[in-house]
Each structure stands twice: as C-alpha cells, then as structure tokens.
Picture 1 (cartoon, rainbow, N blue to C red):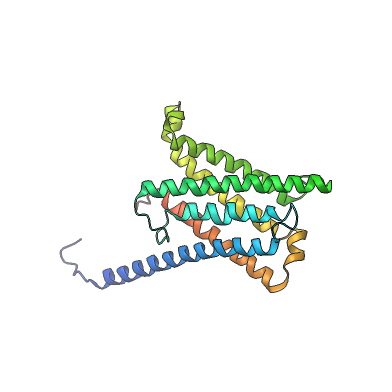
Picture 2: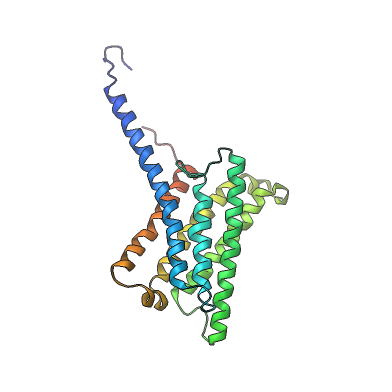
Length: 232
C-alpha cells in the first residue's frame, strides 16, 4: 500500500458484514438441506405405502439411500451442519456408516424392483428412469470401492493412484449425487408418481427436490475440489 493513500476501515467493515451474511446464508442452506432430505424421505414413504406390494418398497429404499443417507453423509462436512461431532475422524466414521447403509438400501430397492417386475412379467430397462437408476448404482458401487481404498490404505498398490485417490473419491461423489438427482427427478415423471401426486403439490415436490442437490454439490465443488488461483 502506498504511504500517501489514506487507510479507511469502512471497506473492511462492509467486507466483514458481507462475510457474516454469507456464512449465515450457507448455514441456513445446509439446515434447509437437512430438513428437506428428511422431509422428502418421509413424504415418499407415506405416498408409497410400504408393504402393499413389492414395488412399494422400491421408492422407500431409494429415498432412504440417496435423499437421507447420502445427503446426511455428505453434509457432515458442511459448514453449519447439524452434526454434533467436532472431530474429523468421527465425522469420517459417521460418513462411512451413512454411505454403507445407503448402498445396502439402494441394492435392496433394486432387488424389490426386479422382483416386482418379474412377478408382473414386465420387461426391464424400458424407461429413462430405470436406465439412469442402473447407471447411478454402478457409479455408486465404484464410489464405494474408491472409498474402501481410502479406508484401508493397504489395498492400494499403485502409488500414483494412492496420491490422487482423494480427488477421485470426491469427483465420484459429485457424479453420484448428480446422477441420483437426475434419476429422482425422472421418477417424478413416471406413471406411478403421476398417478400418486398431481397439480401444485407435484411442482412443489419437484422444486424442493433440487434444494439438497444444489447445497451438496456446491459444498463438494467449493470445499473439496481443487481451484486454480486467479492472478492479475
């Protein structure tokens, strides 16, 4: 700073106010994502009436897997998270618990869908939702395998892969959540859902579905993926 330029604290004060506002908005967004993920899971569970058919368990399991477990597992590391744990080691442990339960729930949901279609003698993979769902599960399995290598370093055998493993894990997580969101949105256009919910309620659910996705993906991009420094 040049000596003949007078210093003024006004700009700094405005910056602090903007920073506090930004932090408050981020915390509010994270809390909203927590509430939305849980609320959507409960809503789908009520609408599907689990136990009335084999298919009825499919939406429940998938909602638990992606809206609840995966969302909560990722929001553990977000600023303003409702998680009471301060230790990163404990957060990582909880993250693994959420992701493991989510993967089991997703595979179970797939099993119910396959069993339901086999019983009804209906063809598989005939809709965009089913194709996207299979792609999401495949990438989820790859993400889990990548995570296992991080949890158990002795599995790794290639030093270069080990050095970039965290970046791969984070990138796969972003892809999984994006695919899961697209798959869920496509489910809202299915015949079952169109017959279950219509009108303004359907549009509200569609918009609310995007909130956790925006919060989680923004958190992953800003907090975990590398950024290039802009120099002037």
